[in-house]
Amino acid sequence: MDAQKELIAEFDREIAKTRKMIEAIPADADFNFQPHPKSMSLARLAGHLSDFVGDWAHSTLTKDKIEFNPESDYKPFVPANKAEALEKFDKQLADVRAALAATKGEAWDRNWQLIFKGKAWIDEPKYQVFRDAVMNHMIHHRGQLSVYLRLLGAKVPGIYGPSADEM
Image 1 (cartoon, rainbow, N blue to C red):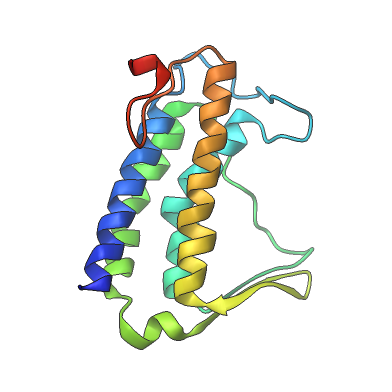
Image 2 (image 1 turned 180 degrees about the horizontal axis):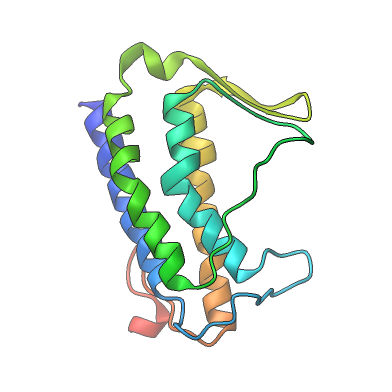
């Protein structure tokens, strides 16, 4: 089995499923919607999902460390609407896919860190970070979006088979 080929195929499948979920957001959805005060807004969640196929995945594949400090100028992507979320999602996909194809062999074993305020929150091999903090994390937030869609009265698309709305 060619593990690199299989990982790229899995990435492509999961990205397509994530895009399908973002596409299901109603065009007139209130992007300020939050199901709970501790929850992200719909805008922040859609932006977070767009970042997985973009900045987050690319940084995981092409860097060995990301540092966030109080003086960092990082601002999360918060789209104004579905079209903006999908535009960013699509725009970055080719670069990430190329970086994924270029990451081979021992590069996966290199250590990768996420440093926040001087503390290492992630300190693992690049492969583990890509699986957990990119792929699985994206799938987790995609599941959150399915709940938001249900609460907004939108149809939830099937991901690993038909949804109740497709039966």
